[in-house]
Amino acid sequence: MRFQTRNLPLLVSLAVLLAAAGCGRKSPPPAPAQPEAAAAPAAVESAAHLPPGIDWFPGDVDAAFAAAQSAGKPIFLYWGAEWCPPCAEIKSTIFNTREFQERSRLFVPVYLDGDTPSAQRHGERFGVMGYPTMILFRADGTEITRLPGGVDVARYSTILDTALADGRPVAEILRAALGNGEVTPNDWRMLAYYSWGTDQGRVLPAAQATSTFRRLSEACPAELRPECARFYFEYLGSAARDAGDGRAQLDAIARKAEVARLLPLLASAEVAGANVDSLLLGATDVVELLSDPGSPEREQLLDAWRSALDTLARGGEGLALSGAEQLNLVRARVLLQRLEAPDAPLPEALLAEARAAVERVVAATTEPYARHAAVYAAAELYWEAGLAEDANRMLTAELEKSKSPYYLMLDLARLAKQAGRKDEAVAWLERAYAGAQGPATRFQWGYNYLVGLLEMTPEDTARIERVGLEVLGELGESPDAFYQRTQARLEQLSAKLLEWGQGAEAAAVVERLRARTSTICAGLPAGDKGRANCEVFLKPAARATVGA
Image (tube, rainbow, N blue to C red):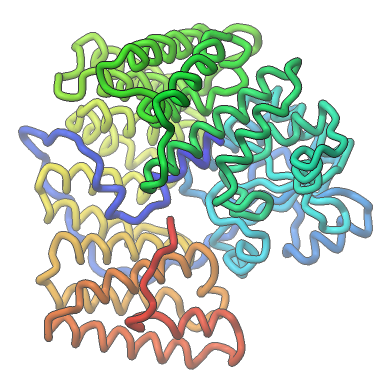
């Protein structure tokens, strides 16, 4: 899925956010002033930014499920965050359309912002981690499907209509497809457009993903070629992840066979329109999986992928890329060029194309949510193209216009760190933390700030202790704080602090942070899972392996 794939650099720790390559600026601007420590703003009220035109359920999640069962209506659950660019893209390309708003009368729409009370606990209950996730349930609470965000409005509407009309759960369809049971064409469409990137192992365990997608791509009816291609691209992406994890890669014969299968798909406009997400964001992984540098297969794949991008750029047949997608398309060209010539500077024509695309899209995009998504995509394009000066200018100018300027400050910190300006990078992280809103968001941005200090100023034990105590204070004494996304980052933070706290002075800081956490844990209800999650923080055995 396009948005969850896209979402990975959004939600990872700052260590990963700042690791990508880029080029420094020749004359950096003054570092931003470091703000005084600020009290945490009040929790964000979800009603303040509910997408208009939809009768979102006004009560809590449990009340919504009760109301849906009473009315005999399905439930549409949206899980997201105000600062999240892919969420902004959903709001600007799906939720604001007449098609979705009319369909929303057929179900009970529930807007679950990650910063609302009990949101993280509900996130764990429904198995949702990444923002955004959209789930359709039956009236009795049975999950039907997880809807993709990275498709055009017409396809989204079609798959939503199918799910509403049929109501057959994707988990049941998958079992039938793998067990030679009855699977209708609409069932295959439901499978093809299921949001596998937000599945969290509920329907398909990660260890079975590669083989399952391969089987689905082969069993899918030939007359559903665009949908079958979605399974095939999922297979290639999963195989690339397996190879990246050190698992067995495809042998030479298998690679040639996959190239022969992929090339006709890349040449199909119909397939391209149904697989925009994979074409924009999966190019380098697939090309590296199936070919070696300098090989004939590498040249074939690069040419074919560029042609597929040209097809998308031309549009037609109802296909219109959003502003963010237009920028992601140029970013894909940049990444393919780097694969072809990794040691050579990017061609001036490609750099000019990148600058022109950003200028055109940002100037034309005024709706706040669409602009937030476009500016993020522009920053990523500039980063991959090595245009750090352009990125800095754009992001700095955007701060006063942005709905979530603290999000953009993470990219400014990344740029400053890459250029070796650690003080400026830390100042941006501090400023971002001070401006973040909502309990889960404040902890996440506090995590980013604290991790930045551990990486860039590990010797500043006094500051690390002060910030650590403040960030832990964000958790308060609410058992809801120690669930899902917040808990995942707490586990990551525990591992980073334990690794940092080897010397005597640092170890003393870790001990004081552990004592502060123990006080928080003691205030939580005995027997609550949140308390158990809290109590493992900074215990040496609690080494984090949770992904972002």
